[in-house]
Image (cartoon, rainbow, N blue to C red; front, top):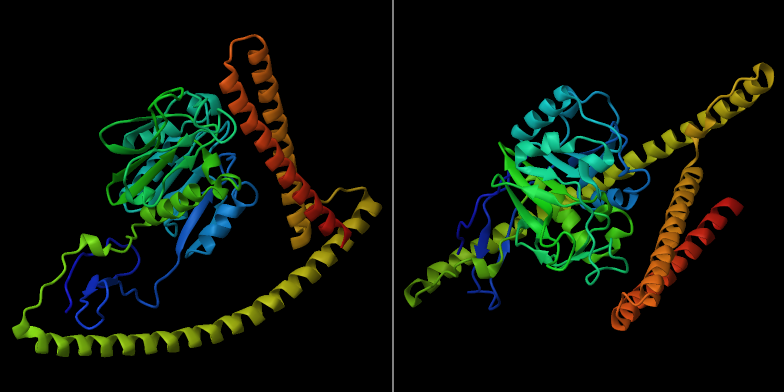
Length: 428
């Protein structure tokens, strides 16, 4: 027996109705099937790079980019200045990963508001200090969606991942973006001021500073959707090691493009079948099974065809890679000769190999880890001083120092691994 349950909000392709199959013939718990066309396109995400963002696909957000690619998204950096409607026509989501000392111009703000109103997804990520601390003007854009980034720095002495500036957020409101999320780690965050136009889905704890304030908020505007987060570090490589952060990342981007999650069996009314209709229902069930079998056969055929096409594309890509490597070597030879003859400096670094780019990324990761270790050590010294002066109870002192020592050990282990990885790349 098939029962219509819900229609799916979608952009770019249509879903059929969600269907419920009774346990008349399976003798198991009912389950739900959503049929998605085999030609469904991948969603496209732009990560803005025109505002000197700290969150960059080629470094701080490299792991996020990989996670999104593995889950049906295409991601790329947006570098076309200034932001115009024609530039966004192919983007399903636009991300601003913490603009630093840069401000959107009024025409760009108008363009982004129209983009969301017409159905686009927008994600804005900040950091402690908000607009004032970062010298940007994201609130000029977000205020029309009911959200403002405040000039605050969240700290939580009790609920944290080793440092007060790395609070563990457990006050989470049920929403599609937080489905399956029990806790989040949002480092160096600012709080948000949220009006009735928006919904706050995550708050600081009652003992945090500031206490019980929003750090994540969502809004719907026209046909589009918006997510604002108080810290871009929620999606950095370290942040994504937390299960809650990874789940939230996928939920957030899926919600921005309008896809829905499967309907849970408990949320669907189970159909009742009387004895007089068992025979008719059995025929209907058999027909449904036949339809499902035929659909699966078509799916298998499509996958086989797709694998052939992918093989052809792979061969073409190998050819392109070979040509690019040849051109890169030719350019480097030309650059070296030109430097000797004319004394000109030619920036050959932009023609790095894949290994060279990976080495640069690892160096960047090593520098970030070293800075974090230094920060943790400074914090530990500060706690030692407070304890020595008698302003910190022994219980709190022991708890905090243990967390910090564990954090230092973890960072040292990561640092050692990164250095070995870099050594392996540079000695090959």
